[in-house]
Amino acid sequence: ERAKLSKLRRLPAVTTDGEDVELLANLEIPAELPLIAQAGAQGIGLLRSEFLFMNREDLPDEEVQYTVYRQVLEAMAGDPITIRVLDWGGEKDIEALAEGVPALTGPNPALGLRGIRLLLRRPELLEAQFAAILRVAVGGPVRILLPLVTNPEEVKQAREIYERVARRLRRKSVPLPEKLPPLGAMIETPGAALAADAIALEADFFAIGTNDLTMYTLAVDRAEAEVSHLYDPLHPAVLRLMQFATEAALRLRMPVSVCGEMAGNPRLVPLLLGLGIRCLSMNASAVPRVKQAVRSLGIDGCARFARRVMEQSDPARIQELVMGFGEKEK
Ligand code: PEP
Ligand code: MG
Image (cartoon, rainbow, N blue to C red; front, side, top):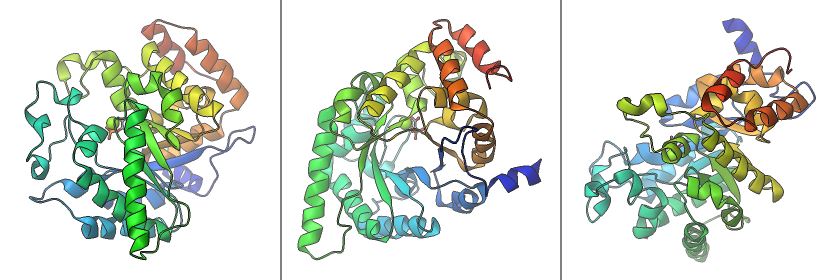
């Protein structure tokens, strides 16, 4: 079994009818890098940059960040990396940022100054991060992701800062790629999913974060054991939001990926492909099994299956359908 999975590393992630699927890895700490190459991922779909800000008393400056991003890019040897700018807030607690940030003491941190909201309030954080990423981007394919977007204006404001930083670096003759790396939006709130058509006009790509999308849609904290039985990414409300956002992206031929835990579950591959998703980013260790699933499926069968699932409104019935996906549909 292990040998079989390791042989898969060199095989392409392609469906039985020839559709290519991009399988990327999520990176939470640099120690995971060797695993990514071993697993046969085609790049990094989500680099969670929070680790840079953790376990230290001050903020990591542009140089510190530049060094780390560059190491990651070099380790990926020409494969694309997607760096998500700091997603601080909610359950993530970074001491060095606390000064002057009211989110820590707010009544509900998950609904407070989190993700892109904090970065727009403290633009110097975003500036240092953009500058470090832009400098690294001359060395290979890089994309940038904005966390917890809820409206198009946030993407627009972030892009203004991004372009300002790029102009400043160019003035100082810092080498930058001719075309700036794409700036994408995480779709991880119901608001972002339902406004995806408007956000798509400002963003270059989408990454659907099903972990937070599930939490915010169902009002179930990801980390709250008392309600964990209600945390269900297959709830029809979550799936409909994913479908809506995916279709908004596909209409504009804009790249869209899924990068929550869902993406690493081989049993959910038929549904995700059927919804039109062709890019999945997951824990590196999940890549071989997901690839195996992709290689056993045909797109037509997936599309038919997704239509059947999306006709359902009962979470239990959807669970049953998804877990029962079998030979018949293939
Ligand atoms: C998500 O919310 O689905 C996601 C990928 O981001 P994180 O898990 O880092 O919040
Ligand atoms: Mg998230």
